[in-house]
Length: 143
Image 1 (tube, rainbow, N blue to C red):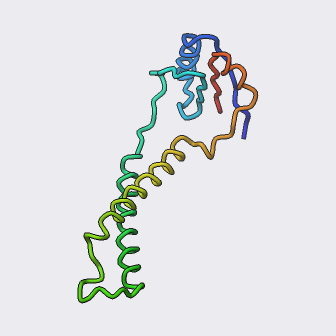
Image 2 (image 1 turned 180 degrees about the vertical axis):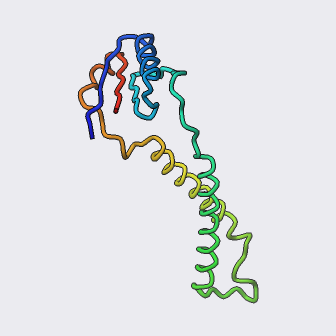
Image 3 (image 1 turned 90 degrees about the vertical axis):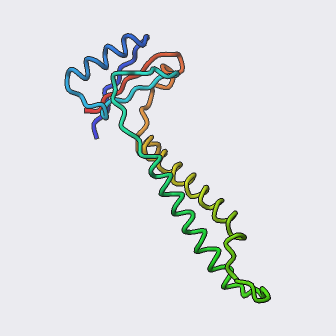
């Protein structure tokens, strides 16, 4: 994999001009990485749409399904004496189903956020930490 071309800019204006020039040259937005010590609110880069909300719903449904299977299987497996009452009581299992629904949504959302932010896949750009800490803006381009 080729090394990225790295440029360090003193002001936001210089960085935005460089990004406009890269777009005029036809460099895709996914090949550009902008690093700064504070948010830049760049209108030049098109951010991809996130799908986290859909994954949260799916995670919640999976958590609820797992909770139902877990509570029914556990109550039948233990062999409690209920005195003629049903062994599976939805009122008693409601809190477990609610909590595991929330847990499923949270875990899937966290996993998707890590994937979308590329926290596990992006190789670090070495040697630019001091420039970013001093308030400069670093633009790395992979071609």
